[in-house]
Amino acid sequence: AVVSTQSTGAPRAVPQGGMNMYEISTRPWLYNLTQKYGKPISRLQDIPMVEFQTLKNLGIDIVWMMGVWQLGQYGLNYDQTNPSLLQEYGQVLPGYTMADIIGSPYAVVNYTTNSQIGTEADLLALKKNLNSIGLLLMLDFVPNHSAVDCPWTTSNPDFYIRAPKGTSPPYNPNVYLPNGIAYGSSGYGPWCDTAQLNYWNPNTTVARLQELLHVASLSDAIRCDMAYLLLNELFGQNWGSQLSSWGFTQPYEEWWVYAITAVKKVYPNIIFLGEVYTPYEVPLQNVGFDYTYDKQVHDFMGSNNLDGLRWWLSSHTPSYFQHAAHFVSNHDEERGATFFGSWYQSDAAAILSYTLPGLRFFWEGDFDGYKNQLDIHLRREQGEPVVPQVFPFYQNLFSIINDPVFRTGQWQLSNVTQSTNGWALVAYRWWTATEKRLCVINYSGEEAWGTIVIPNATPVNGNDTIPLTDLLSGTTYWRSAKEI
Image 1 (cartoon, rainbow, N blue to C red):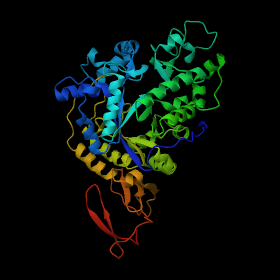
Image 2: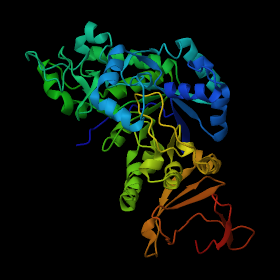
Image 3: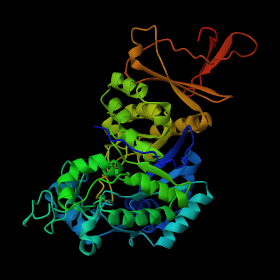
Image 4: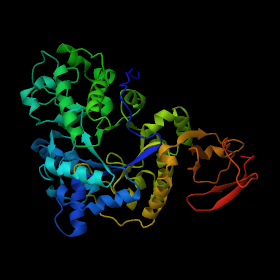
């Protein structure tokens, strides 16, 4: 069942139409910049501002510096010795070395700046510099778990899920650490470099809010990892037997309602992005997230399931999509050119993904047409040539979606009728008081046609004609306003 939730009532800080966000894997990016500039660029203060200015000029609003927090030795040792991980590294980066394994950024010891890349003062300076050129800074918060060697695992073991009370060691090694604390999990197996926090303990919730407030003090936006796992009903499904044995009961209020409300009282313009998967997208929006992942659009396109895609678009409200985040790739997913089959199929997916409302979510490498994955534990991916056609495509796409109509306009799905092969077309409209856009995407790989009614079509020049300009090619077609 989908959980019931309460709305925070907190003000939404995002525009009606959409924003553009660019994810950077921070430590691998610093490594790449070192190669690019031929000098050490290993700390935040070393990053040439021209790199960010280039993103701003393209049309990016938010830069997500993924993975800036302090990690521990336990996670790094695990990542450097686990046989399954080592096998994966060999597949994505043949010839990797131990120096390439830098540790998962999601096994956080504490929310201080990773000492390898700088200090808190450096992070604040970066935020100030980004803000000065009109960019917002997004940072991570990992709510579900901490690193195994977080000090709390020793000082406050009740902050964590523990083996049922009365259970004697040795504990199930597929679920618990030797001390009885559970590994972090989504309910589908353990993340063995992490420890599972207990959000039904009021003391944990208070301590975690303080960490979240600290992250907010250093950022303009926060991406919350696996945010849906904290929803009370799902948390109870995953950990109910352990929780009840220790006397914990389900809180009346969702932690996110409590936390987002408290943070927005101090930082009213902070933007929350929640990682979430079906069927928890709407519940997570209801507890106050400004944006939530919408992976269904990505997956329906990847499987060429156009019926499923249209069903998904038609079964959710415009308000839902205004608060959804769409992507062709990110650090958890295959590269777009791999997932969709080629760079040009990925570009086609980008047209649909990034002309929908909400957060338009880009990842470093998207603009190069890369196919090789950057593993979350590694500082580099396997080298490959840039596809020269991809960046000009994105330049053109940004010139389209940067128009105010795609940022502040209204959006509505359109029906395609009077056609035997209109099933191949997905159509929707954007408009403001002065501008109109019609998006028609043929994602089928074959020719298709159909009729789309545009109720607010307005003739020009005092006659019945209306110009329809294809913004990708620049070609203009003249049509009868009455007919459309």
